[in-house]
Image (cartoon, rainbow, N blue to C red; front, side, top):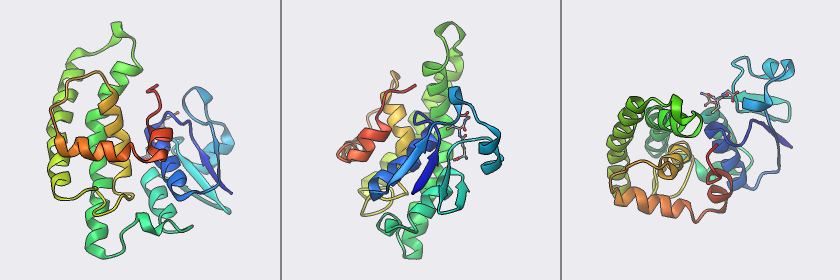
Length: 203
Ligand SMILES: N[C@@H](CCC(=O)N[C@@H](CS)C(=O)NCC(=O)O)C(=O)O
């Protein structure tokens, strides 16, 4: 049985649980992090004191994107991970680019969801909203040429960007029209795992 440590309102935990659900894996998710805290046993598993961490038959991995790659390389998850080297690089590029995207979306999320209104930094929100809007043009352009960030089919190249795209879409901020991104987001919503794991209320 796969064990996934991490509270489910974490973007990085959502990514891993989403893939586990897509793969139909049996897993036991344990709440760690944020209000749940972390004990010494958890810190021994993950010296970064961050979530998520997984344990699979005595094998422990942390770093959410590494976990995605591991799961998609085992347990029949290969259909989510292109094999051919150029197709794989094209898909994986979005897993790395997601850090750029997350750096724009995260401040808006923290300010609007996890910061009381009187403590908010309006300048930071405005700069981050503008940055996310500009970056969304890059996504839109890519999704004009292909249906998924992973290529012709949904895969792990879509998951990290989509976790933050959902937050961007759910936040009450101005967004430019991005037809291809909107078509991709609508297609994501047809996936049960995306709706059930990622599209939960932001908290
Ligand atoms: N690069 C790491 C980042 C992990 C990370 O920053 N996790 C956040 C939650 S999204 C965390 O552990 N925050 C502290 C906490 O929840 O207590 C990964 O992708 O796994």
